[in-house]
Image 1: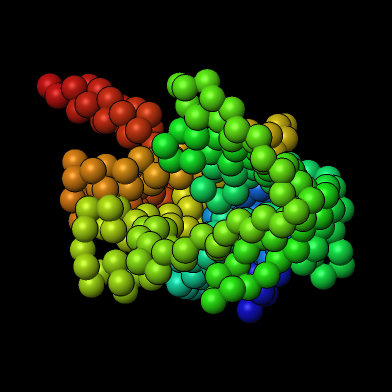
Image 2: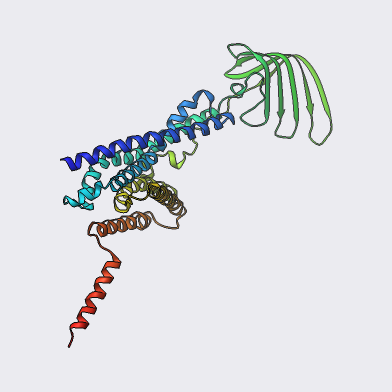
Length: 374
């Protein structure tokens, strides 16, 4: 049918262009953020693209929701501005008649958003957390880079190596500053060093160096020289029982063990899917065109509505997590009320109802009844 096919084709073109622009903007922002994390030592520089890919996957539900909302608003605005809506209205179509083709175009995207926020979002967060955690738990020697001062995983040691070999097992001009738990401090320097394994333990064997020890609060100083000195450099233990973040847990796991924080996360995930559906109806119910004005007003409304609704969703998540409100009352109060108001607004525009017109008709009818009375 010409009516359905023409609207869906224009929506597809607008959605594709909007998605490319939003994806480029978000990708650039996340790339800058990931590079900042890598420069601070929170992300492995060799895994920047992998972390960036997982982060973008986690943000796809939000990107798709905003792209769908903008595409519908821009398409309807263009039709109003070019008087195409007037032609369709004059040919017997009403605003409610646009609901069919719009929903036929939007439902595959709504399904993708729902699946992405329920399954891809926690999986992507889990992969990102594992990458960052593995990099933070790497061994002390793995942190060392030639020509740079590097801190150990415990924060008590600082390493410096002037040069190392290609295999990374030997180095020259080594400096180590160490602070013990009892407050003692030591500074060790050596001309060379190598890594050796003794009974499944990793040692750094230093050659031809000097060691300076100071005792906290005593003012004593001990200087010793050595030809060979070994120090234990063990890897940070991997905490297998580490508590998994709420955002990284699968949805079914959160439902199996309901906690306020878990229900807040479930409410956010389900809310993202419902938000996308409500935005489709909001775009259809609220978009109007003025041939004498540009699309700036509709664009401003689109961005404001998205930011306002999204902030309410995040605020509701914190309320549910803190126990201030239950999950079901929050879902009904936010998404249910928005759905009802939007449907009423759409019905009003579909029936071409106006409060001013209704009051004028009532006043005119009352005046007529008074004039015909004897």
